[in-house]
Length: 243
Image 1 (cartoon, rainbow, N blue to C red):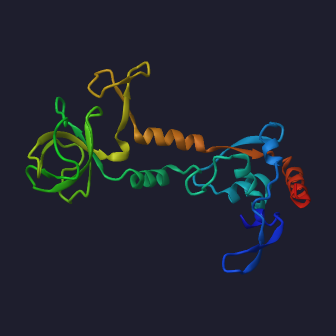
Image 2 (tube, rainbow, N blue to C red):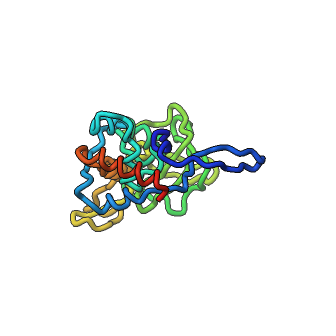
């Protein structure tokens, strides 16, 4: 943002150690972009491409990377460029794996975890003796989340039984999947929320919801290329006048 802050007046600032430094007055603000946000003749919409950076968008639209700072000023939701921009699919999946660690163990039909197990206890695979730690239970969604999974613990598409090391409780598991691909909720054909046991239920997964949010983040407002020089000129003039 160095180019953006070059438009701010520099003033002397007294730091706590009695040291005076000349710094940009970041409290100074131009209202021009607030006005532009209400005037559709000055902006258009742009769909971000994968992991595209703001300076790359500026280069694509304006043939210079220097106007990148105009984008967050038209999109007030962009506060942190590491979290508030869209990502291409592979990057998004890696981020989701980190955001939603562990795996989901899908309960076999007719099984329940209501009243079973203690959070944090080790769950032991009945045959191999390999363990995983219980992190969460989701009785109405029909699965539990486990972390710290030992090598040799049953993989996807296998049915197996697990036993709580402390509680002695047991349950049959129908499948193991990455937690970020597990259901967030279930809906029927009309979009109404239903329980996982409802035969009409359609799972809506965490990943599907995150993809939808990522697609929404990819849609941003930008200054129209034919208006960018005039807009920047107005902005600079207002900043020089000190508003």
